[in-house]
Structure formats: C-alpha cells, structure tokens
Amino acid sequence: MRYFIAWFGLASATLAAAGAEPVDSPAAAYTRTHRLKAKITLNIRNESVQSVLIAVCDQLEEQKYGKLTVVYGPGASVGQKVTVEARDKPLDTVLDEVFKTTGLGYVVLSKEGERSDGWLKITRGKERGYEPGTEPKELPVPAADPVKEAAATEKLDLAKKYIAEGKPDDARVMLNYVLKKYPDTKAATEAKRLVGTLGK
Image 1 (cartoon, rainbow, N blue to C red):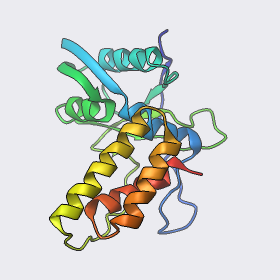
Image 2 (image 1 turned 90 degrees about the vertical axis):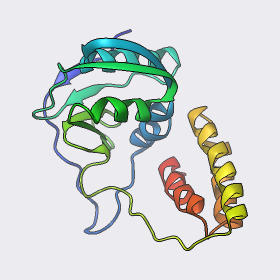
Image 3 (image 1 turned 90 degrees about the horizontal axis):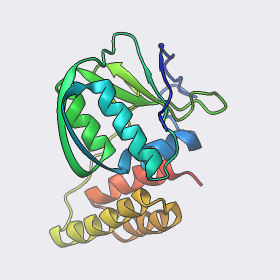
Image 4 (image 1 turned 180 degrees about the vertical axis):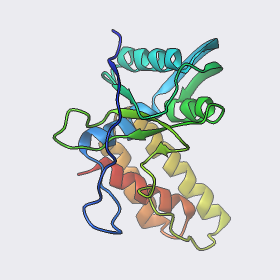
C-alpha cells in the first residue's frame, strides 16, 4: 500500500517553555524509536530521492510499523538522483547516507492532536530528526572505566534492539539498568535520552 505524500510547508514546533527540551508526542516517539530504527534493505540505482522514500515507507508497512506519511518543506527537492545500497540497516542510517549528498534533512513532527503528528518532514538543510534548536542537549560525561563503559554499551545496544523490535517495556528496563548501574558512562547519557523518547 503506497503512502500519502503532500507537498506543503509545516510550521516549526514551539517549545512549551523557553530553554526547555521538547517532549515528543506518543506518535512522534513511535516514529523516532520504532520506524526510524526499523531495518531496511535497498538496492536502488540512479533513481530519485522520492523513489527511495516510497520504497522505505512500503517496507515499514510490510514490517507492520504502520503507514508513515512524508511531507516536504519549502525548497526540499526530492527529484535528485541517488544510488542506495543497504542491507538490514536502520532507517535513520539509510536516510543519513542519502541526505548527506543531496543537501536534505528530515524532522519528526511532534504535534499531538494534529493530523501531522508523527509524520516525517523532508527539509532543505541538515536536520536529523529535530527542528533546529530543539536537539537533545549533550551533557558532559566524565571519563569512565573502560570495562564499565563496554558493559554499559552492551546493555545499551540490547535496549536499542528491543526498541527496534517494538518492545518498549523491555527497553525501558534495560535503559534504567544502565542509568542505575553505570551512571558515569557515555552509554548512560544516551540511555537517559532514549528513556525520554519512550514515554510512560
């Protein structure tokens, strides 16, 4: 089943309070933690970016992630020709590889209660999932014991696997384990961000 594409600009999301990090709506969180982490396989040669988007959206539906609607912001030209080879790669990785050569970006729309909630907006720019200025803040992390860092990273990777498999409860348990057991690691910083995307 083909996905619906509309060509129009959408207003940027507004933060609830100045300086506060935005909180994803459930639909946006699902797109960010499930659809963008779904494994995609492509072998496309010299076809348009739009063809790539159609192909990945079809695969998302085939994998039971639901229909992902894609819209285009001003100046986002998806007629550019690209060649893409991917085998079981996360969708966000595939999009990064395609967009870094075409001057395009993408934003997950978080507009709870609106029709566009959870959609993907293609932009003319370098966005990778977030509107400019709303990206999660990277907190400084003190140097950690290499053994602890390796152990925390292993648990973090397992949590990401659960997210990709549609098991948010299992992922949340593993992420909280990393935060409690290895709080002073880089993996814990990413675990904290991922917990925030999963919601309650």
